[in-house]
Image: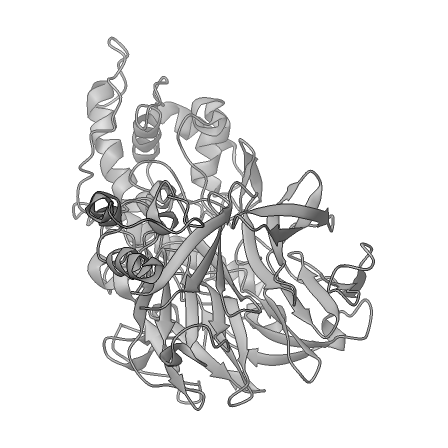
Length: 163
Length: 432
């Protein structure tokens, strides 16, 4: 019980920290031109696909790059790659859930297993989650339809309330 | 003539390995010795000190981790990914310098393998086994005895490094299933759990018996604690002490961006070598060692700010290395083949970093630390480099090879495993 209470407090603190986060991403911009050319005509909320990818890159650089790497290659044995995998290109809901709930089970992807803990990134806004997923789905050789904030909102609403 | 040619060839190798190829025609007048086969890449692509040569004795094994060599020079390799259902392969070196797999056994994947007093010990991520060896140091019975069972293996630091000393003590590393014991592992800003519960069953070295089957935690002793994750460990018989290499915690900047810059996070904390005595505590998760300030610093999860010191009762490292290099193999060299400076010194195989972005990744080499009377006597130096095959690595997947395990052959040669492409290297000293 104590543990859950502490978790709750920490979550609140974490969310406040995220809300207070107004400074630009601290990481240096990604230099390599790994963004796949967007599919024309596929608009997304808040300024279209190109804008979403651009914002998503900033989110990726700040919160994802350390583990998943600048080229989306991940870390062998530890952090899964984001290149061409079904997790990235497949089911939207599963992908959104990975970001919001984190991932801490051993997973086999294309014959290799990955086991490192990914923390829940539920402190990101719906727009940030949509942007970062749109970015990874259009980078590292991937070219899949982007994710809308409304989809994130829907998945978030379906999850059990944070303890 | 032969020795002159060899000296020239070997002497040039470490400078720039490609030079040897370019320079070779200069010695066309020299007749190469018959047993020198021109390799595709000199020294299998490795850069070594003068007088040393390297060869790839086999390639393409499935994630070879630690190594053990028997008295005949056969190499037992522990695989982290089963090969045709088997987790250990025995390699025999032919006259051509290439190894063949003479036997495959053990139906469990894992990291640890060790030979001591007529037994081959091997570990999965949850258990430790031993196989009886016959008089020729071959496995007498492919059905092992299960010595230890039920060890924690949960998401992080699952590999169980093992070691048996002369007093028949079986040491097993149980890595922390956490980065820094945060309430929420690896979550930005999450604080440390009070009285970190991970320490009860992990983040330390446990001692078990070699002659008792099916031991659980309760049958063992927590020999040393506060060690986040140890993959490389070895016993140093010059001072009869256990030495371990700790993988330091990750992501200081990611988790506490207001306290650490990316540049600080890339080099901190140190990867530490510790001499551990029974009952020692190295301080994880409450402290880490900062090799720039040369101090034990309170972890940010427990109220630290990058400057506050703590851990007065925690042991100090024997030597500290830059952060995140991931030491996976430790070997005290007891052979006589290598020059005198290497005797009783430590070789460390660094697997290479992944959380130093946006700085380039680092590591991916084998280093040497000179020792005297069980203490480091000088700075560490890179001994074997070039495993990665590229000069700059921004993502670990770019590294062609990643050093992991080390073992010494009966003739004093050094074996190094690569768990990326599955190569086993043999490094020998041929003289100046």
